[in-house]
Structure formats: C-alpha cells, structure tokens
Length: 239
Image 1 (cartoon, helix red, strand yellow):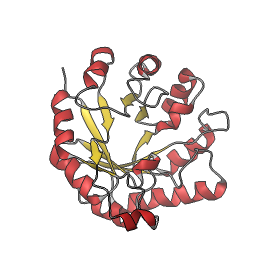
Image 2: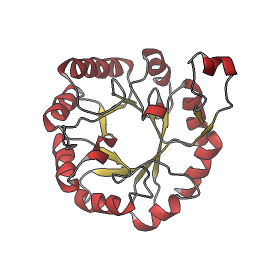
Image 3: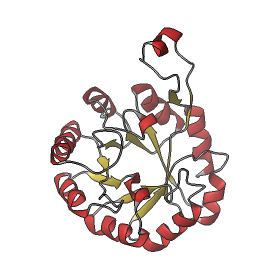
Image 4: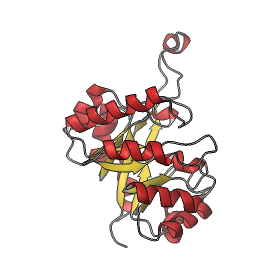
C-alpha cells in the first residue's frame, strides 16, 4: 500500500503538538471541535504558523448550518485574510443552500478570495441531496479535496456513499474520509476505498473539571483532547 496522508483536526495548542508528535502529516486547525469545528482564534493561528507540517484553518464563523448571510460571508473573507497573513498552508470551508445542496456562488467567492491557499471543502458536503452534482461543483470550484463521512454520522456508516463519492470524483479531486475513524476500524475503509488521505481527531476524553466549573457554565464536562498515541497508532495503519 502506498503512503496515505493523515490529517488530524485539533482545537488547541496542546492538540497541535500532540498531533505532530504522533506523526500527523497535516493539521486541520479549529476551535470548538465539539461543535464540528469553528474558525480558530488569531492567537492559535499564529501559534500554528510555527508548525513543521502544513496547517489548514477552518473558516466557519458559527455553529449550526452552512447557510450564510452577507455579513457572515464578509466575516469569512476577513478570516481567510488573517490565515493568509500568518502563512498557513490553506483553509477549510463550505456553504449550503436551504435544500442542502452546495451554494456554488458563495463557494466560488470564498475560493477566489483564497487564491494562493490550499482549499478543502468541509462536511457541508454531507448534507447534499445529490453526490454527483456536489462533486462536480467542488471540482469546478477548484477545491483540492472533499472531507466527507459519506453523508452519515460516521465514515463507517457512510461507507456505501463514500464509494459513490470516490466513483463520482474519478480521481479528479481527492476524497478524504473522516469522522469516527480509529486504528481499530480504519481497515474496513482501506479494504473498500482507494484512499489517499484520511481525516481523524484521534482524541480521548479529558478528565472532568471541578464541579464548580461545570455548575457555572464554563465547561460541559465533555471535552476531548488529541492523543499522540492514537495518532501514532492510526498512522501505523496507513503506511
């Protein structure tokens, strides 16, 4: 098997260090991974700019759907500018129409603004009603890759649609499976899909904080952190 690139999503400086130590090939940099990932803070972006591997920053201004107002789009454009200014390798974004299909006009505007940066289409793709059409839009917009779980909560559950997505892409755009993947289950995907890139959090539950922290609403007690051993174990399955 040829080398498969491992991208690890992180949302703090400790996770960034753990992912690199574990052998990640690329970082998806976010805040609030428990919400699916939001745009990282300026301080975290600057910290990540010192990384020894490529870092792509999430561009997502809020939790929830991917139907954006003009003000939100303007914010995303400024966030892309901030990422470019720090020298990160790329950005990750997506946008939807009310029916779940990709908003090609918004995507094109964001992609043009990100000229010179690598671009990944995020899991807004997993809401689309038509895989073939969505892959076509992603390719013609100029994305390098599509991050997808096969329109399911996890990549294992979405395996059939992942196969359809790879077939629709036909090698013209990279398909990067992600969601719920570990060293213990990735073999199922490797046996059925021509994977060249893989996305995972490689996280473990963090110790619960002091009860007062939860009581005051500063934490929900469900936080997770990147585990370098999990990163390393998954990486070993990909080489």
